[in-house]
Length: 428
Image 1 (cartoon, rainbow, N blue to C red):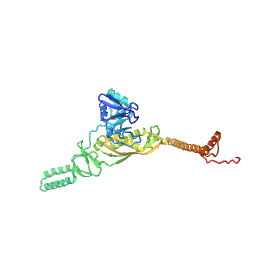
Image 2: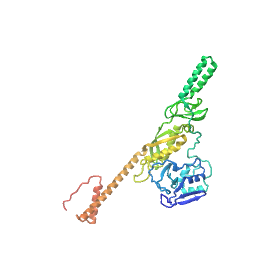
Image 3: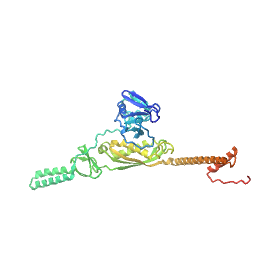
Image 4: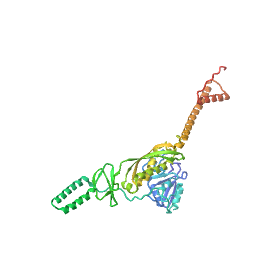
């Protein structure tokens, strides 16, 4: 089995109950998720490992590689700043050098930083990262105490018909002077009335019973629930519609340190109403702040622009890939709030005003250089063709000095910014 990057044969790294294939040349690691879990058992994890082979792939400009085991083309998934190659067929993952530690840093209680893949494996087997010390969490960790489930309800119109019959019985009691019974039944009727709930399409009510969450009411129509149940959002129900967040323009430094202005829109929806209500104070504010944070994390990893002939990803040239990574980053941050990110796109991208003029001049200079380069290449080929044709057809025989003079005149004529003025000699 050979490394798909450098085509060298894999070596086997083994320690107690663990076998990992790695490349000595590029330090890449090819590993199955079962072995990743064994690595995780040797570490102090705050949350279970996510299997990259089960995640939805993203489209990136980076070169795809074939799986060393089954030969099929591997797909890429995004993990907080790294694009990991995965093969769903054989449940295997390919980590380039440094990516293994960055992957585990997402799940460790104590971050180990970014390091060489082989060094990380040796560190794990030496039990050097098992010390449980307190540190500042780098990722969001909110314990979800509630999960959404449906509340028991009955058809509101059926209950309304029952209460109508009940009201007729009350009327009969008063008609036959059964005052005490009638009063009691009136009190019961009044108590039962608050149980009616009306919902429009794509709306939901999170209900509590004396402070305890008892379920979420969904589905458009007329419902009847426990009359003592109260809606957490009293004034209006929770909207399940897709909504758009526009945080405006932000000034962020790109990978090269250039200040740029970036604006995004995020299309999102509430997926788990219980998490949205009970895990965060205000899920819309939470989404806005996490979107800003994710945007900064993504933008500072890429340059604003890159040469066309290079394979470097840039914010301007790879908008679809950047949007996919931005969506994945925001989704990772807001999952704890029960939100689903439908899409995230960059709507505004420009250099900051203080460097915009300088960058425009730089782009103009680069364009002029490219144009001059093309002109010179064309002029040299034309001069070469002219000399060859004169020599082949025997029109004139030129010595080296005359050739040099002719080359000089032709290049000046072809490369000049102004139209050449012909001079005719009649003394020949």
